[in-house]
Image (cartoon, rainbow, N blue to C red):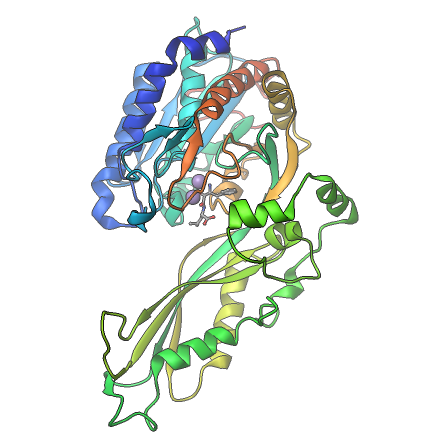
Length: 470
Ligand code: BES
Ligand code: MN
Ligand code: MN
């Protein structure tokens, strides 16, 4: 047995500076201006995996956002653990709300602040360092493979296409995905489900060009007004989404599940004050906060573009307006089905004088995970040893598009990470707690060790291409 605590203590200064190196790369996948940075982050990880002893490291399917495929030493007869994660990050704006710049990783009060610190570079890094720790012995306990992508934050198209061509990449005995947080400090979680996503752009055109609001106002249609009326028609002030058919696809979680959620420690006032930072929560009051966050769909407006928003005043009737919107989806609400429902609802709300189009940007299907799997039991043991508490089953409102594909060859997927609930992912001052990284190295290292006590069910013949399924 490797003493992972000793490993962490001996190497944490170096490891922290390595992670800072990775976090300095602004690998923002949604912005083509950062293509070269995405590539640099992939190279950083690939070079690292190679140096740690991966016998194969490949950059697949893209020059700019390659999938990093790393195959550890072959360990005959032992299970295959596939590690999935992403090296891309969300845009860092608004920049002036960061205490220290997003791509200058800085430690304050035991936290490491940077874009990507917890989502997902810091968590991927913890697993890579666990790999380093087990590689320090003659041979690692299991067959370890890495599938690290650079497009998770923008829909994972490259990886979807790759796995359609090469589904055997995900043949494994377990898929480990560390891209979600603890439930509370000291309370590791395993997600039993993730919401899906349907991200769309609604564009309204009402005239050939912008018009003088004095000369034409009163008789000419206004694109912004038309757009906001459509948007307002899609949801009531009470939080009910007015897309016909949408709620027909919602399955209420079972009584047992709801009872289990009721038992989770949850302080609504603290959640409101410390995490949300608002005066009140909104949404369907007949449902608990967990149901609203985990088991019901949402409709959000992300931004509205068009017309005049500069300094001063301009008297203009805008001819075009665009809104970026999205829905979070719950089990049974596939992205495809909801795209159709949204388009139909918008078309019905659109007045005859306007050209209204709905286009889809990206999305994800919802995920349900069976948590009675062997790898989850193994991870539960690892957390119990190191954290003094096993994993608590929860759902999460976030999405990870590729997860359904990761499960397609039958491997149980484990969604469990080392972030904390106040990590502020996608927001200013994103951070990861430094102690959580070290716990992560120990837990994932122990997970690899304990997985070795299980047989690879069909025996792992692992040339990196023909992994065994369960
Ligand atoms: N890691 C998150 C998803 C997440 C966070 C799930 C916390 C559960 C708990 C992931 O990187 C993410 O942000 N996904 C996007 C997906 C989208 C851009 C297709 C999301 O949920 O908005
Ligand atoms: Mn993520
Ligand atoms: Mn994210």
